[in-house]
Length: 222
Image (cartoon, rainbow, N blue to C red):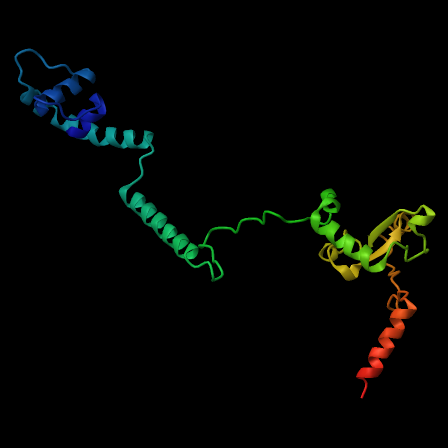
């Protein structure tokens, strides 16, 4: 009976009002007004079967419209949410151990990942730092034709195995060589010739320094 009253009036109780009176108000909304001289209780009992059949139906329709979720499913959702929160709290409390994400979650993508084939790769700090190391180690001389900036050549640090084919070697020192603009442009991505010198690079040493090294070596030698 209370379900029926709530479905018609929007409320099931009212201060100072009996339940039978509220039922009569709900019946009036359904086109069944109470006749004069009939008590509220008698009119409600006369429509008992009608009220019983409509109260359940109206409640089911109202729940369907409001997207009502059964109590068992709501309880299961709350338990699953609490379990997930506890798992995340335990993971965050152990920073020294490798973090395992809860089942069903995906790891976040790395924030500072460099794509070797992206146009901004040549402007990244990692590439410019490695490029400077290569130029400092090998010098400003083309390993293919021997041109230098003194001849007006523009020097490039070339990937022996192209970035397009081997992106995993884009920041590997042993995959880099120094070429001038013309040789690097002609090499392209189709050629993988290694123009680096096979022998270690020899640097000119001052004669006085060589003599000092020999004298020190002679004194140390038994």
